Image 1 (cartoon, rainbow, N blue to C red):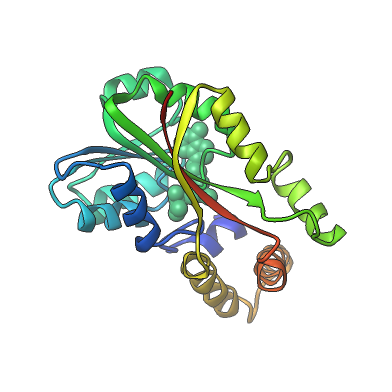
Image 2: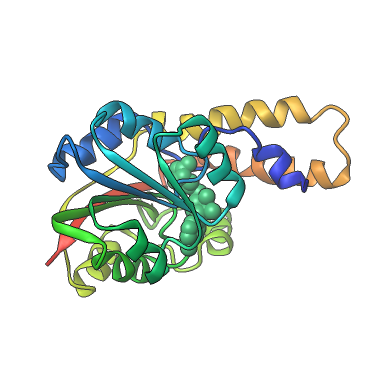
Length: 238
Ligand SMILES: C[S@@+](CC[C@H](N)C(=O)[O-])C[C@H]1O[C@@H](n2cnc3c(N)ncnc32)[C@H](O)[C@@H]1O
């Protein structure tokens, strides 16, 4: 197993998120009690577990490209329909059915926000909504090394006005949007920092490089988390 996957093995989440913000999105989208919900880019399934608590009557589908995440969800959350594959693939989406809510935490940026929204439009039930989080700039004052880090990690990262403009230009209406709080970042970075500390003793060169890279990302957020953040946006077709 690569050093990257050794570090990430067993983590509950692969990006910022928490129950409070997920509950906010469900309420805003008026997601019914017996909703059909897709978690697109579900990772290891933390949000599916939260959705199971918040909407116990819901029918849940998780989709992710990384098959080991899907195997883990099948074992730990057998009530979830877990599908390995591209969350934008028309045939997979058609087979999965239509949804009251498509939830996507920190995954749309990979294929791109516009491409993701375009693919998901046809997978919504009438009155259905998409709620997704994306990393955005909070201001234009961040130091050069912070800008450089994100230019490498997420070229084209937007600020809020740019984010809202591209959503509206793609034919969607924003029902509401908000920043995730520090607890959502801690839910990811806390366990990740613990894994880094546990793997540090005796780490070989490859592992040390991976640990250093992840620690630098955590340190950057601790020092400059006021300059960027995860923005949760709930949208419906316009
Ligand atoms: C930053 S992680 C977030 C995972 C999860 N939503 C969470 O918050 O823990 C992004 C996830 O999106 C998945 N992903 C990226 N592009 C995808 C695609 N086109 N189809 C399915 N999954 C994708 C990755 O495999 C990864 O698990």
